[in-house]
Image (cartoon, rainbow, N blue to C red):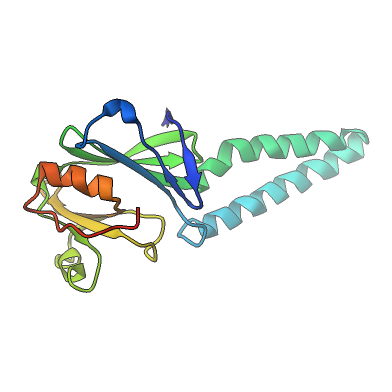
Length: 199
């Protein structure tokens, strides 16, 4: 796990990041926060219960032994929250750079972990997840699935089919922006189905 680096500017539940220093039409980056109603909802609820259990578990014995120690308990619970809550508040950070599409999982805006790296020229299809192209995304039931979206109800969801490093068919779902698609088109125009996006 690495420290996450970079500036952010939030737009609701979507965070867009751009660095003009790269000065290249073939470079793009974008970041989406995973929505609260996602698979992490249950984990968030369990974490809240853990904080309550730890708070009460510490408060009762401390107050019995040290009546003035009540202020320590909220501090200890806050420390626990600070170090654990990021892991149930993930985001996905995409970059297209030097012919690769890279996805990082970013936890609480603090830590990052590699999720996926694909050479764009090796993609078989990059298309919107809509009525016309969705069957292609699910064509191979044995394909390894990578889900890097805020939620599947989000707009501008695209998928990319490819063969992973183990030689297995794979598909990744992500949220596209116009800049992201333009950069991908440069590296693999034959595989890309370009549509107008909201971002």
